[in-house]
Length: 292
Image (cartoon, rainbow, N blue to C red; front, side, top):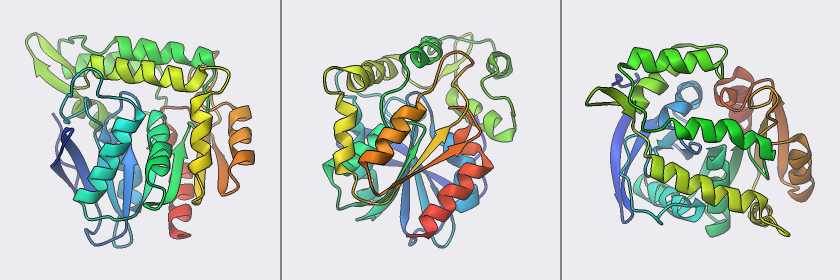
């Protein structure tokens, strides 16, 4: 439901796990930067970042995870961070990138860390956007509310976007958000609905909950041991919604920085949803990639 952004190319990549849609920005022979969206997000969430930073020195490769956007839905029991991480490594293979930088937002950051765990020799630089450890437990409330709307049929794309605007999660709406949500919607009988599969997202939500909050050892913390490459963490200073805490609490960011000597944490005056499009985030990521 959207036009192709100028300067980008969409293509399908066939992996053993299924067909994945990717969006390519920049020169094909430039070092690859693979971008991994969050739980129910799609590849358009990185458009602003890629438009600013891709070019002769960096090719951005942004994926729709399986079960999201224009990628294929795989069967129940096929999701989870390790499955998505293997897909990311497969995407890098398909674009001819034996090594690459990786940017993951939200649960995409956990997938990025899992890539570093599975094959650390391939991950040259790591950017984690507003997730590195265990979220505030109350922050899951707005996430679950968002996931629960998947599959809802709206009379039109305009009606769907109007409701999203009313929620107030994106205070500074612009053309990038129109593009993001129009891409996400598909036509069905009676109107439009989300392209992302509710079952796929719910499976990953449950997987993440076990990784974030299992006791006594929280499994997400074990991923930190694999991070020996330079790492940048962007933390949203604003709560996910007022009163619901943070996906990356300040205490967890500090704990991560203490455990990972190669990491630097930068705070961004944005919320969990808008952090990747913030000018300060783009500047920080650009400087980090250039340093490599």
